[in-house]
Image 1: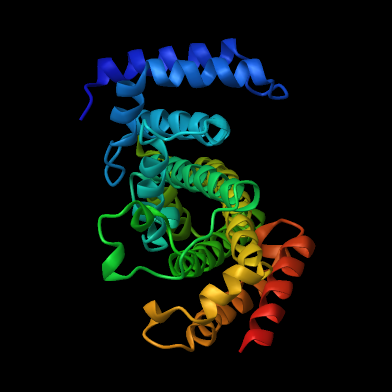
Image 2: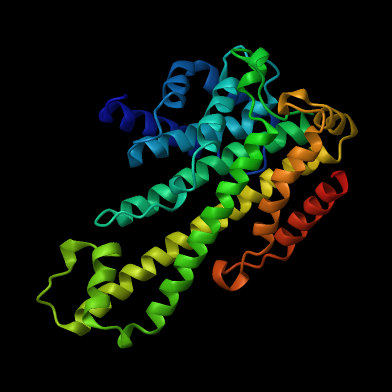
Length: 327
C-alpha cells in the first residue's frame, strides 16, 4: 500500500499535469502524444496505482485510481503497442469490478453514510470510465469479446479480457443497484416533503442512518432535529442522483457493447457456436440470460430515477428484440 504522503504527492503531480494540459478541450494529436509520453515516463507510478486494492480503498486512493484510469482510458487507445501492460491492467480491473455484487454501489452503513455515499459514486465513476474504454475498443478498434472463459484461456492475454457473459452478469447487478438507488431516492424525497409530519422517533432514525452525529444532539427540540434530518436527506438525495446518472450511463455502455456484437455477423457466428457454454446452443443460452435483465431495465421508473429514460428504454428494447429473434 502506498503511504499517504506519497499518495498526496502523486495526486498533486497528476492533477497539476492534467490541468496544465487542459484535457477538457478538444483532443489534439500533439497533446495526446505529450500525455502518452508523460505516462511512459511515469510507468512505475501508473503501475503502482493500478495495482491498488479497491476493496477497502480510502477516499484519496480511489481519487488517484480514478484519475489514472481516466487518463489511460482517454489517451492510451491511441498508443499502438501495449509493451507497458496498461491494457491488460485495465482489463484486470474490469474483471475485478464487473464480477462484484450490487452492494458495491448502494451500501449504507449507519454512522458512515456520507463516506459511503461518496464511495458509491467514486466506484461507479471508475466502472463508467472502464466501460467507456471497452466501448471504444469494441467500436473503434474492432475488439471482439469471447462469450465466456475456457480452461485453454487460463493465463493468456485473451483471458484478461472481460467476456460477454461477464457483461450480462454485471448488467444484472447494475439493474439491482439502479432499482435500490431509485427507490431510496424516491422514499427520501417523500420524507423530505412530509418532514413536518414525521414523529420524533422517525426523525431520530433518519439522523442515525444518514446524519452526522457531531451536529445532532438528542436534547435538541423537534424542530431543530427535523431540520438536521432534512439537510441529511437532501445530501443523500444529491449523492443518489449522481449515482443513478452514472449507473444509467454505465448500463448504456454495456448494452451498446453487446449490441455491437449482435450486429456484427462474425461475432454472432462465434456466439452461436461457442462451446465454452457447454453446448452448441450457446446463443440461445446467452440470450436467455440477457433478456430478463433487459426487461428489468425497461421497467425502471422515470419518476423514481428522476431522469428521462426514453433513449435508454429504446436501447434496451432494441437489444431485447434482437435477443428474442436469436432464440
